[in-house]
Amino acid sequence: MMRAMKSKWVSTPELVKVFSMNIPLTPAIDTSLHNLTFPMVKFGHQQTPWDLRVLLYKEGAGLNYRGTEVFRRIAAGELGHPFSERLELVKRIHEEMTAMLVKGGSRNTALGTWNSLRNFFSWTDEREVVLTLTTVETVYRLWTDFLHDRVKTKKIKAYSAYSQAKMVALPIDRVLERGTSIITSTRLTSPAKSPRAVGVVADKQNLYETFRFGRLCLDVIDSLQFEVIFSSIPIKFQPRDGGAIELWCGLMHPSKLVTQTPDYKGNRREKVLLSRSAYEADRTLSSRRSVVNVRLIAEFLLFIGQTGMNLSQAQNLRVTQYSYESSIDGYRVYDYKQRAKKEVLFEIFADYKAVFENYRAFRKKLFGDTTDLLFPFVRYHGTLTTSYPNFKSFRELICNTTGIAFVTPSLLRNTRVNWLLRESRDLDLTAEKAQHLKQTLIRVYEKPSLQVAMREIIQFHRKGDPRLGGTVMPCPAPGICDGVPQPLLDLPPEAPKPDCMHPAGCLFCDHHRDLDSEDYVWSMASMRHLNTIILRRFRPPEKGKADHSAHVCLVLMVLKEKLKWFEGSNSTRKEWVNEAMEKMNEGDFHVHWRYLIESAEGV
Image (cartoon, rainbow, N blue to C red):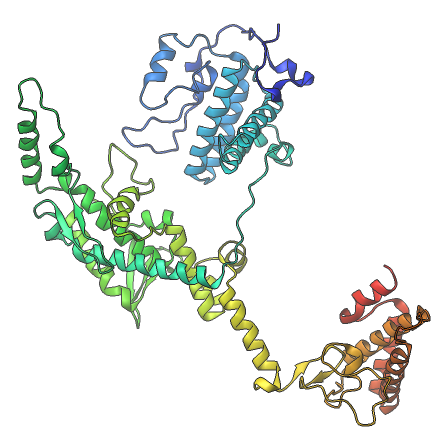
C-alpha cells in the first residue's frame, strides 16, 4: 500500500515502484564484515573518520556524525537492521570515492561528497524510499526535484541545491558508468555567474580595498611582535587607517563580567576573577594562541598576495625541504630534487624581503624546531594540521573593528594576476608568474576591465588615426589609407563619396593606396563579385527614391580597370589575377567579403 504523499513532485505514477510503506528486508547482514572507511584520509585526533556504514541504517545518515554516538546506537540495535538492498550501492560508491582519493583527488571534494550523500540518504529514509543500485537513478531525480522545489519556495539558494546534487552525482555517474552526468537530466541548472567585466569605479574600488587590507596586515605584523604577544592583556594597537584594536586572548571583556549572576554563596564573581588572574599570568602559547594565529594569518595573507601561491600550497609549505638562492632584488625559493632540475616555488621580491625574513625569525623564536611548517597555525580541538586555517577570528577581531573589508586568499591571488596582466599586457609573462597555463589564465583568472578596454581603444586610434599621430591604417575597401577622406578631382556626381566607412567610397578617395600582393588581388576580385550580385538583383526604384545602380556600375568599372592593370603588368601579377578568377568560379571568396557574398546570395 502506497504511502500518502504531501509534495506534488512525487506523485508521478511511474515512480510508484520506489516507494513502499514497508520496505522489504532480506536477512540481516553483518556490517562489520565490510570495511567502508577511508584509511588513506588523515583525520585529527578528535575528528570522526568517515564511515559509509551509517548509510545502511534508517536514520543513520541524518544523525549527528561527530563523536561515536551514531555507532553506539548502531551497536545497541537502536537503528534496527541495516538495509541489505543498499549494500551493493554503498559498496560501489565507497569504491569510486576511494579510487578518486587514491589517484590524487581533493580531500575537500570528498568531504563535500560525503556530506551531500548523507543528506541524500537521509531524505530517502524520511520518505521510506527503496534505494538500491537499480533504483538510485530514479530516486536521485526525485531528490533533485525536491531540491528544485525548495529553491522555488526560497528555502535554499540555487547554488546550494546545485552543489549538493553535483557532489552526489560524482560517485553515482561512475557507479552507473554514465557517459554524461546524471545531473544534466534533472531540472537543476548551474546558477548564472555574475558579469565578469567591471566598471571603472568598481575596478578602482577593488584595488583600493585590497591595498587598504594589505596595509592592515602590515600594521598587525608590526604591532604583534614576540614581546608584545606575551605582554599584559589586553594587547592594544592602532592601525594607520583608523580604529583601535584590543585583543583579550580569548578572555571575556571586563564590562561583561558585571552581568554574571553570582551563585547561591555569592562567590561566583570572585572565582571568575581569580581564574582570569591566573590566565593573564600565564605567558605561554596555550593562553596566547588566538593572538599568535592573528599574526600568522596576517603573515600568511601577505605571503599569498606577494608570491601568488594558492591557499593549499602555501599552508603546506615546509621550511626543511626548500633551499633559498639570492637574486638581484630578493631571493628565489627552490624545491630540493635529487636527480631533477631545481624548480622555483616562489620568489621573494625586494620590498617584501625584509618582512619575510622578519617573519622567519619570529617563527623560529616562537616555535623553534617543534614543527617544520612554514605557517604553523595553532589548531583547536584536534583539528588536522593540513586543514584550511580559520580566518573568522581575523575577520571579527581585526577587520570588523577597523571597518576594512576582509580580502580572501583567492581574491588576493586573482587581484594580483589581473594587476600583472593589466600592467604588462603580456599573457605569457603573467601566466609564468602565476604558475598557470595561458589557457587557464584566460579562462579562470582574467577579468575584463573597462579601464583596460578604454586604454586599448585610445592606443588603437593613436596608432591608426593621422590626426592623433598615426600614419597608416586599414580601410573598408582593399588597400590602405591614412584615415583622412579626400575625394578625387573631377569626381562624377553619381560616384560614391569617400567617408572611411563604405568600401565603395574608398575607390574614389585620393588617399587610397593599392597593395602589390596576391591577397589584395583576391580581395578586389571578391569585392567585384559582390557588386555583380548586387547589380544583378537590382530592381528599378519607386518614384521619389534614389537610384544607386550608377554607384555600383562605377565601382565595377574601377575594379575592372585595377584588375586589368595587374593582369597586364607582368607574369607574376597575371598569375595572381588568374588564380583569383579561378577562386571566384569555385566559390572560394576572400574572408573579408565571404559573409557578405553569402548573405547577398541568400545562403
